[in-house]
Image (cartoon, rainbow, N blue to C red; front, side, top):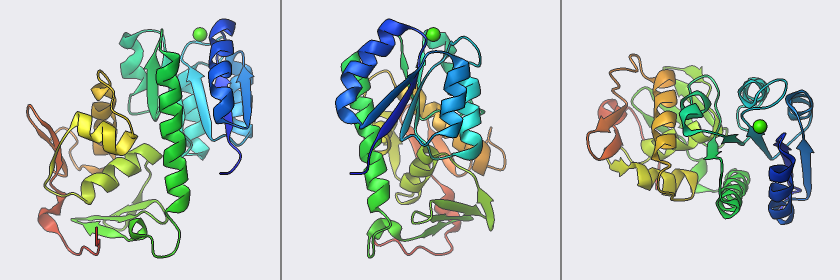
Length: 246
Ligand code: CA
């Protein structure tokens, strides 16, 4: 495993100490920034395997820092800490691109589980480009072409910018066309953990994905809602080629 570096931007010192205590074993370097200014500087200048952002900070807030990271690092995992569930819509909104969130007060064990899942995903990503790996094979479905080796999506030959989680979600759907997934299935298979009450994060990522790939996101034709159940990929109606063996 490569050296793991985690940046935590959190102005509440007791929370920062608690998180540091529990995540220290999971990484080689754990750095805390105590306000938004320091957080912004470290988040955008250093290389981090994970950035954990408190939403409310003195100086630039968690959303501003998140947006700044996304401008140059679309794949860098970002976990947001929010004080109220009422803030979730902003956190998970189209414009930010956080991969995951926890609502305060959160369980430290839950945080550790999330961080482990994120690191597992990074390892899988790093292993994916090995020769003969099945997951490296491109898949072309409808007007989408998905290349896991390069983590690139083309729609009608135009490159679509996706965050790591949006990419994983689309890739997962496209490899299982027509199959209906419950939100809990998607949490298990794409996020790497099941957690009751976090289905909202699936909805938000689906909405973000739709805004990027659907010609009319309010009437989606590629990732469609199956009422009362979940979602399915319907973009295969216009399959042009499919070379996935999996
Ligand atoms: Ca705070």
